[in-house]
Length: 367
Image (cartoon, rainbow, N blue to C red; front, side, top):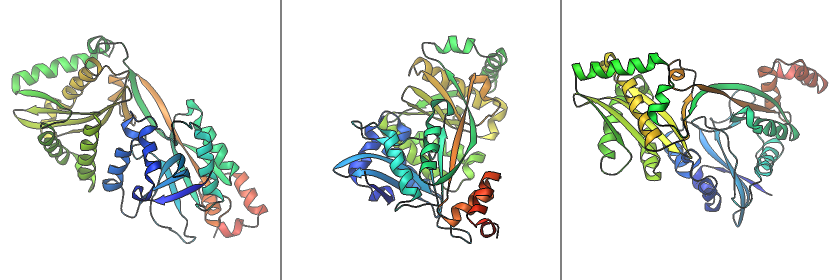
């Protein structure tokens, strides 16, 4: 099988792009629409998306998407590619539905990166759930094709299994402190202001709902990222078109006070973005909105799992009760001086040092 590396999705032949939707097409986070919006609005300056296509346009076998963070840097002009999902979802190599041989696709890409036309100094793959074994497969294939590898921790992820439960039954299992907080905050809202919950999935209400969400985002600390608004607006429209968007808003006396983006895809409700206007923090608008979103995705969407995304924020464990770890794996190319120097810098391993001494390169990489 041949491997061709394309700079930007617009240069990838259509036959390979279709795989992004055909392979587990119900999962929005691995869809073509998601990557196209990220390429337009989410990339940092100097970065670009790379599509590694395996096979021929007439017989496509698979594709994996990477991010080149910037041009070559440093004295040795090292280059890198990160095969990591922009939102830290699980890594996937996408294959033609009739093929399904993900290992073959990953191996072809690893060979091209290690010794072939797409030779790269540093590669990173992630995120992986170590329990499914894929991180071991990727590490094995990288080492086979000339890389020194090291696995590393990325983040913790909190989630809850809710299949077959009602929202009432699920909340009854949560800590009494959370239930009491929700009850007290609802009473306070009824006494001090008029609170209103709205959930929007698409149609005519979407445009004003996005406008209100952006107002909340700008008023929060999250609105400081220069590309955030354009990326989020594009994401909301793409997700709505796919039918996976659940945009929740909480209003206080008619003013948007909190907003949350949830995605319901492949049986999982992803709590994607949380934002609130600090002026309304005394009313705990974020907590009230989260409660309403839980009720909707459990009772209406009937999801099997609620996923709180990246990080070990203390509040998450009050809403969900399970945690897993996501890991990544880095590869340093033994066939390039920049790869070896990066290995020597990043890996405090006597085995790496012995190998470099044997190759007569230890003094070079230490300069």
